[in-house]
Image 1 (cartoon, rainbow, N blue to C red):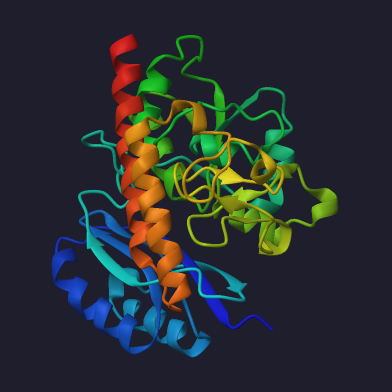
Image 2 (cartoon, rainbow, N blue to C red; image 1 turned 180 degrees about the horizontal axis):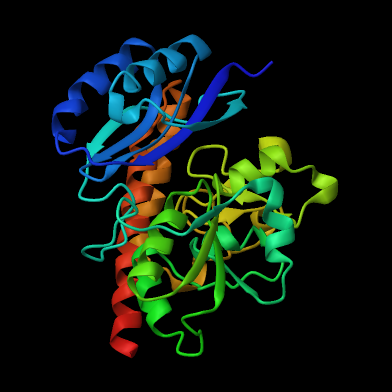
Length: 325
């Protein structure tokens, strides 16, 4: 039986005192052996954490002691190994970064469509279905006939939307994302830009995969998740994907047979775009990981370095696309 309970949650709510909550939440999490990441901002809370069931439920109960978060909902799944290496509570400007001033789901948001009614809704030919996730997430799974904006980060979504000149303001638009948080922010953006009929999948893909039987599903593939499980499928069971620790792109066992694959250094998705300086840096990092494993230690810094490198690459790509416009 899986030992670790995983909980994903978020809530857009005014938290002007969010900075004061950081230390207390962190202390309760650590004292209950809970690991993961929680983001706090004036617009709300966003997190994915895991740990022993009693510890995780104790943390959630503590968070909900705040009356503003009393109705905080979360999605649960189980893992054989803890998908996180450490506990982090971070203070941010936004709990999901869109980068557009004034856009807030606390002001305006699209209409929620329950998972159980999503199939009928997106089967309407007059509905434009948009996947608000990043390209590397869409690559391993999405809803049939959904539009892929081909973004590398959520910050690029507003520019993509501005380029959709053929999308009428009265079009019926249905959007979805992993857990619902990017949907809420993106529907708020569309409402701010004058779109009238905006909808989104309540609870995101995770809620859909949890509640809708595979035999009735319109989901095709796996759902990328931001932890060591990499992907989940129907019933939120862990999927078959691994992660390239150079570019953070999900990879298959077939990808690992490619001559372009080197553990921790490159994969078929990033090999041809990688500089010699990057390759050398990743090779040294991989050497440190292998040395740590030989000593029976977890090389936590490897995951941190990979995340930093991915963010740097995303910034470079965003800058390149901006210069082309």
